[in-house]
Length: 311
Image (cartoon, rainbow, N blue to C red; front, side):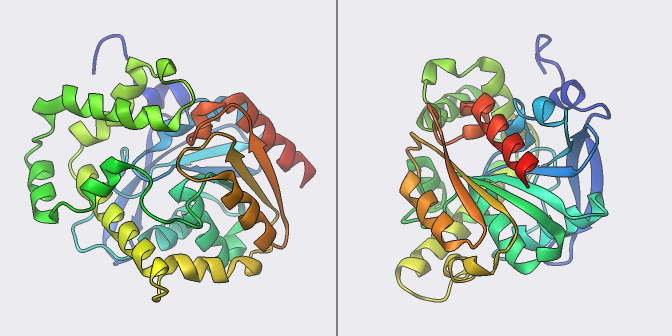
C-alpha cells in the first residue's frame, strides 16, 4: 500500500474490517468482510457487480448519523473470500439472506446499487421477513445485454484461462494496464471523468491485483449474467424473468432511485419498475452517472434519509 494511502476500512468504520462466516449457496464455508458505523435501525448497503464496500465511501458517514450502517462485500469481492468453482446461478440471493440474518436480529433497510439492486429485489421476494424497506439504485431489471464492452469480452473468455491468471497473480505485473482499463470503464459511469482520483483507482483495482479469487468470481458472475440475459431475450426460463414476474409480490416500501444520465440503464427502466411495485416511489438523481453512490452522494444520501424518515 502506498505510504500516502491509508487503510479504507480503518478510516471508515470504528472497528475497521470485520468478518463473519456463512455457507454459500453450494454449502461451502466462506468468510465475508463487512464494516459498520452508527447506531439505530439497521441500514445495509450492497454494492454492484465487480465492486465492493468502497463504493459507499461517500455515504457511510452521513447515513450513520441516524442509522446503524452496515457495508458488506459480496462473496468473492473486495475483502470477502471467494469459493471454488462451480458456482450456483443466483447464489447472491441466498448468501445475502445469510448475511442479514447473521448481522441483524431485526429486519433491515436494504439499499443496493446496480446488480446489487437486482439481488435485493430477489431477496425481498424470497425472504420478505428479512427486509423492512427497500432502496434500489440503477439496477439491470430489464437488461438487453451486459452494459460494458469489457464485461462482454471477459464473459467470453475461457474460465480455466482466467483462473490461471488469477491463481498465479499474473495481473500484478500488469497493474498500470489494469488501472488504465479501470479508468476507461469508470469514465462510463461518472458524469465527469476528470473527477476520477488515483486513490479511487487504487482501491477499485486492489482486490483484483492482490486478492486471489476476485477476478474469477467476477468472470463467473459475468458469464452467468450474460447467460440469464440471453435466456430472457429468448423467452426461456431464467432468473431475470422470474424476478420481473414476482415484482407485485414485494410489499415493503420501496424507493427506486435512478441517475438522470446513466449511460448503462435508462431512467425509463426505473419508472417501469416502479409501476410494477405495489408500494414504491421513483426519484431521479440529478447530474449523475450510473454509479450514484459516488456520482452525486449528497443527493443520494438526502433521498435515502428523506425516504427513511417518511416510512
